[in-house]
Length: 260
Image (tube, rainbow, N blue to C red):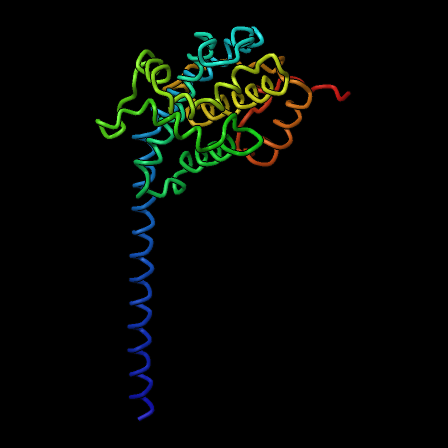
């Protein structure tokens, strides 16, 4: 009788082990499939985000070398220079590409992919209160102005179509007003430095997600334009605490700033 009971428990125990191993195997396959789906999604949908970011940073760098003089001394939409409208359009395209990426990825956990996780950290930084140049709602509304909803958000309006929309549509002017007002304050150090900081994060995002520069151009940064306060904030708070995975932060910061 004792031998029978021992054999019964052994059989039950063995069956339980097999079942547990089968569950663990299936769970491992499920996680691997999800990681594969995440990686595939990022590989197929990240390029538009990088290209629009590259366009935006190229413009910011060009304006920064001249201390944003082309954006100064305007106060209304009617007075806005071609440079400020052009920058508004590039910001709208960048934000639109991000919204499209998010919309397509609603059913995918992009954080299971390394680049997807890094992109999430960069976007969190760019949309944080201390870095963003406009509130989240204004960004989203501005992004929607360039998205062509007739083609499932795949296409974006041209620059001339965007300008016509802003000039002719009162609600469009209302939504873009906070961003336009920000861009029109480039004679002030605070706004210039905030835009420069925003550009540094965009630049680091490009280099991190496209390290071989297969999609974007390799560009130099503008460390000499950063104030001591901005330099310290980028080094110790942005790269030191939130974007610690960014390689070679000295590319964006240059030599250490002397403390006052």
